[in-house]
Image 1: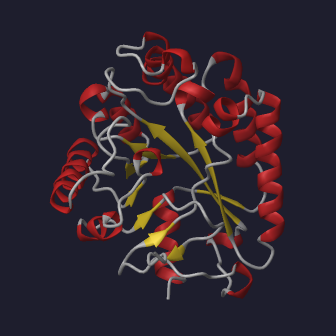
Image 2: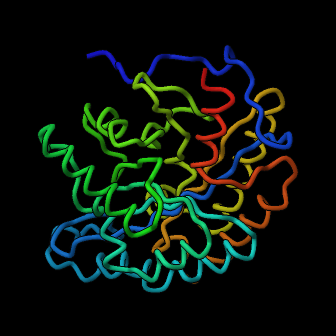
Image 3: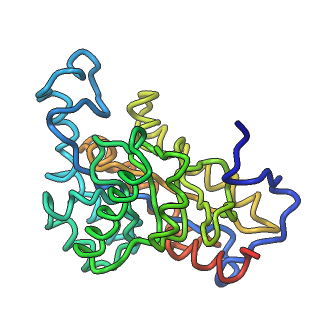
Length: 287
């Protein structure tokens, strides 16, 4: 079937985007704060035990994130004055309320990211998915004090009806479709796509490709340099996607701090959130 969610739009034929204060780059940290069920397989560092339940090796590796890694990450975000855009599983408010409290204190943006990272809605009926999404969004609003404006599916998964159901719930943008350097209008009234990187992403780089910390810093700098050059006539978006159980392992953390320092001190960069990017684009450019 043909894709009906969005139209083809070559970036060279669009009206220019202007970010606040003349910035070329709108930069946000996509911080994944997730809960994983102990009886289901998920993202793993060792495939040999990934199908077991329980799987102490891989579950414990993932569980390092909320127990240790995120607190190390928060120190870096605070030091470089970066607010996180949090891809939040709705189970987190009950399982790890201290993280939500820390985010509320820092005015983080909250993006709905499913109930947990072990359940996808791929096989749900329309009514089942509507009830599921409603519960996720309402729970996040209750726990954070803010109704989510954006959505990232667990493992970037959707059904064909997901965008319309999210629009019914009042959400205004998706992060699942990683096909652009700028926001754009989807063919669902009131709904945008905002860029989210599956390549400049710690799971892709460290788990998928086994790259080193210095490789990570070089890639982040190269990404920013190219986008900055591209943005001479029209603004671009750069996301840095992080999972605390990966990037905040002790031997990697210093390289994240180095990358954030480079970005935070680079001229022409608007340090912002995915919420603010979507809002600015909708107000000034979406038509």
